[in-house]
Length: 53
Image (cartoon, rainbow, N blue to C red; front, top):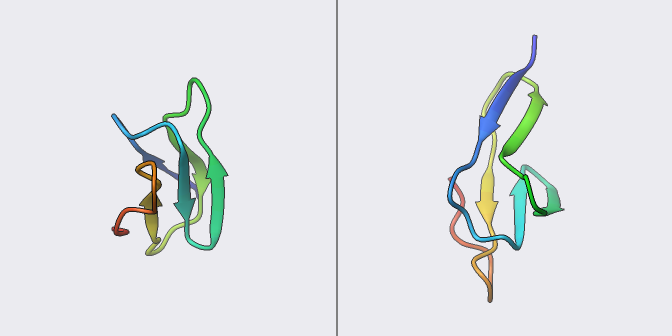
């Protein structure tokens, strides 16, 4: 069983999910097919990665 992590109103730079960094493009809304468990999410706010949650 997979889930979703939805990110709204974030800077259009990069997002990090666990150890992977993804470039954010046009219609990005989050991640699909995420395995159950605890995950680390962080977003690039222009100059550096914001503190994760």
